[in-house]
Length: 549
Ligand SMILES: NC(=O)c1ccc[n+]([C@@H]2O[C@H](COP(=O)([O-])OP(=O)(O)OC[C@H]3O[C@@H](n4cnc5c(N)ncnc54)[C@H](O)[C@@H]3O)[C@@H](O)[C@H]2O)c1
Image 1 (tube, helix red, strand yellow):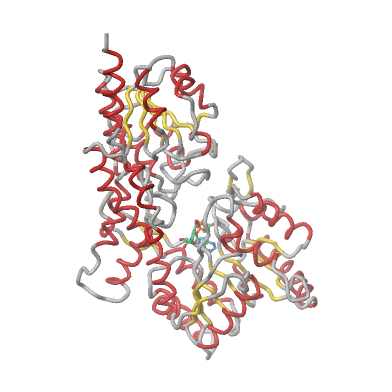
Image 2 (tube, rainbow, N blue to C red; image 1 turned 180 degrees about the vertical axis):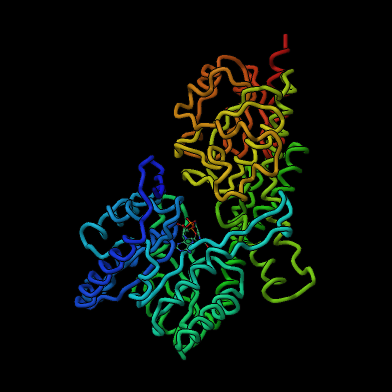
């Protein structure tokens, strides 16, 4: 008997993977639906990859309307039926978002398009491309790092992208627009995607060139997720004039380009490079602050106040404190894709890139400093780090989101575990921290950062505590790692009461003001903070007061 395989959703619901028989039925059902939709004059848009970006992009396309205020697109989200991801398809078909977002509009939008407008569905069959007028590619293109703090040793993982481009070319018609939205190594659209597709077209007897375009996503996780796709400026380009014209029309149809005008660049390599520079610029200004953060810690400077003083100058208003690391899916990888492309797509051998990889390496390793601060704070309290219970508050890569991809907090947990600490974690936005619970397979079997550290096995048992106050009981140290709103105004007295005795407090993100720091010292705690060298002054002030007769 053939063993059935299942895909399990994050809530634990089991979905059997489709059988060969079901593929046939699925496609003929789609053909019928599409024929009806064409009668309504609707364009058929297939979005490949219904992950963080694709699921919401598909809904934005479905929700768009023509000049008469009527929907004129029928959208089919296409997702490969892997054990890991198949569950996204039945969920979306029920009108349930397969991605969790802090933006309430995501759920509303998906439910409205699936259940009311009935112009959004999802499927697993690649044959659906045969029915498409437009294919939007939203699969991932990862960057695999070989070691921590040396991004140049890594490489672009184009497997998912190349596989989907091959299948698209096998199935689409010659007039179908293929829009790559994936963040790619600059040169990919023209030098990798185009040849793959052209060759397949030739084999199929199609004489014309594939109509390929590129336009990158600037989507931002958080409460404005949908708006960051729909109501935001876009850059696009096409491999030829026809593709450029088609992509311009498509984006104008679906996005709010009246208020947020499109920028049309000559060639895809320019739009691909724009994305990589955008994110490398951001990564660099954050990495730049790492050395000043250390300078501040060692020389009595409060970097928080220094940044506030500088920001007043309009030309410097985007100066930022980097927290315990940068994280997110994009900033830690995108510069790497550019550096890799220079050698492996364009064939240059010299090392022109200095700043871009260095910024990524600095950002990837900044969390290690937190482990040193915890160690030093405990030592000042006469306690070893080994076997100490340490509570981390905040697992996400930025405030008020539940996205943990490559967060600085992950590095903190891994390093402190290597040093012998017993880690506890709380994050109001998370039920599971998959980077640990499923570290053998998440995000992919070879990708876990557990491979950069020793003694990581037990971290599979790490669970996210639901009750922050209960989790504090008896811990030796608390790390304030993320500026989640729940953590911004914790009362020091309540914290020490919940712990049951004085403990070490490590502030990674300028969360504590001077009054709170003073209050912790008064209760016998030890306080340390990234970039906050003035803490020593506050400590001395409290001590002096204590010893005055
Ligand atoms: N998430 C963000 O915040 C963000 C922001 C801006 C840009 N981007 C870029 O958008 C792209 C997509 O990112 P994401 O966060 O949505 O990734 P993701 O991993 O959440 O989603 C990718 C989806 O594609 C599916 N997939 C992979 N190969 C496939 C194939 N051959 N056929 C069909 N489906 C396939 C995967 O199963 C997954 O569901 C990336 O290039 C990313 O850099 C992401």
